[in-house]
Amino acid sequence: MMILSEKKRYEVVKAYEVGRIPYENIIEYDLDGDEFYIAPHLFCDFSKNGMPYEEILYYLVGENQKLRKENKRKLE
Image (cartoon, rainbow, N blue to C red; front, side, top):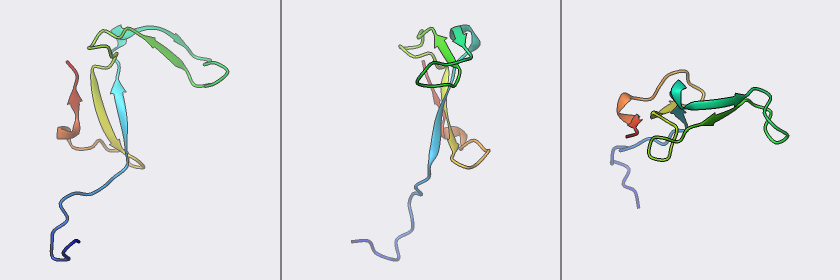
């Protein structure tokens, strides 16, 4: 049971999780896509702990601004 006088400790938001892939990790690309996804495809080297990303960023859905810097995850 929630007491009405309690302060709201968090806010639920919708966000996109976006991985940044460094150029040197891109091996090949296909601008036409395939029969399932017509968007361009990137073929990458998974050299960072089994992932191609150098970092993961979060963007609010419907907003053009990045979330606060502390919500950024650096992959090592």
